Length: 417
Image (cartoon, rainbow, N blue to C red; front, side, top):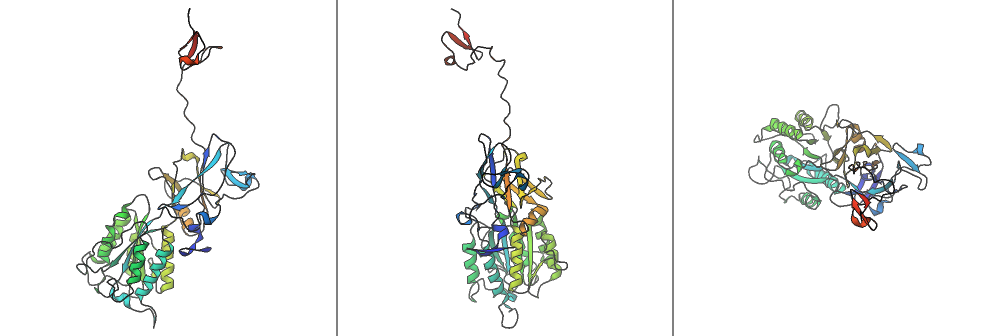
């Protein structure tokens, strides 16, 4: 996958340079029209690789109709594929829909342990990796952050989420992470020395933003250990049940095990319950043992969370004229949501499912195009009755008729003198 450097650093071009073109046919004009379409995130900011600096967004170039995927033809004037038919094409905007991602970070005392002789502590490594994640994906993912154990109330319980999931939370998360590196900071892992994964996940389950049905929502659990010295939330079994309940509400949980003090048995159970296992043959959670492997795991998770929902700026007149193309190949609509695309009129979103979604998330697909064809045919006008006799002027009002004529039943009838 090619990388480009943007304000947020190096990011996968497959995710951030997806040229998303919607061509809405205007059936009262002839010819075709293609051109650049701005791509903004749903909170109003430009995505990297989009906006005025990104250059034109266009469909594939062509020299003949056979160069274009169905349902397009080659517009010889522009040398680009365009909407097929007699209708002209007018470009309208769509937006990639940022998912919600709540970060649940272990700050137990074991996070102070160094990775290797003279190396960084696990806490420094985790903070640096999360700082890179949040900075790279700012504006593309709606982040929230909580830490466990927190420093309020009982050692084994959790208070309110310190940074709830919302747009533009980077301004709160990044300073909090930076400050937590200082030994005197309240969030530095200097106690309580417990590992309360169970109540941390219960706290995550209360985050209101995760119930937002207009976008995908996820929880990311990062821990370097195992449940210890706390059973308030039911221990490991309670954690597994909470994660399972979230999944039933369509909120998936990613699980990252960091370092050597973890419990692979329970982390595998958590990963399976969360519905987003790593795909590894043995460790189904994301395993990380240093900063490089942790950054790799976080990037893979972020890519999985993104890339499959697109909000249309205009409601399609008919789904029979909606076409979704992945790298110029037509993708079929699939109302079973197994593999293909479907449209939700309540949110005005086109969502990709199954292998189609995975191919975008992995970077296998470099370009997504969504096209709207001609508007649905208008229904026939109500029957207005028999037409006027030959030579008789039709009318809707008296003024439509010549002198000495009256408008009767839609026809100009000569008045009787």
